[in-house]
Amino acid sequence: MDVMWFKNTLKQKNVSSEDVASILGLAQSNISHIYAGRQQMSLKWAQAFSQALDIPVDEILRRAGQTGETGRDEITERTLKDLRRGFSDSDATPYAAGPSETKKTETIAIQFGQRAGVDVWTVGTDCMRLGGYLKGDQILVDTHKSEQCRAGDVVIAQVYDNQGGGAKTVLRRFEPPALIADSALDENQRIIIVDGTNTVIKGKVVAQWRS
Image 1 (cartoon, rainbow, N blue to C red):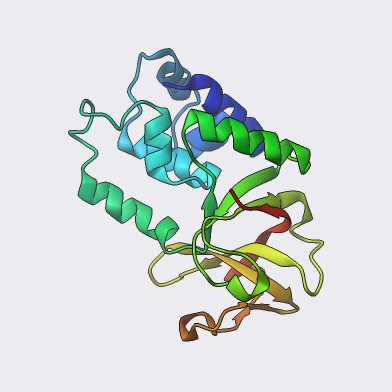
Image 2: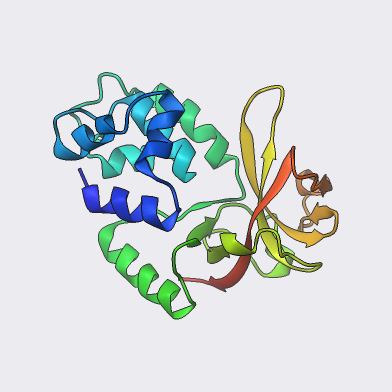
């Protein structure tokens, strides 16, 4: 259990352990028990952390030490596949990598001004390829500037599915009130309107680099 990762990530995301516990309607003391090893990081708790931190559930489980051969009875590959789907369909996901690569990325991110609320993400599709954003690129997203975006800014936004109950993260160029892809692919040509309810800008891309 990488307790420091959980505590630091909660702090960076400006999320409290009470916020996570409230998703399940349970007491914060449960999280203290998980940190201390007196309670296992169950699937429901991993989902709560995933929702609160906007990080894929399998990354939460990996950090909790639940992705090895042990502790897999409740967490099947099929279940993980279903939980991942919203993230794998997204244009960008919160950065996650091994220790050596993480150190290098964190060093670069700090040079670009990373701090609490300014997070590293990884581009996952070619939706902004013509704008110079290639799949696998790292980007720095400033969540403090979500309400200060102007025409031409590249942003991260959440598009909510009211019928299915899910959400998709999109990487787009903001041309008020629309989000537009820089791509030649037909599948990316749909214009998305920012209305503050069904589509919400979560942050502005302030830096980009390529490994």
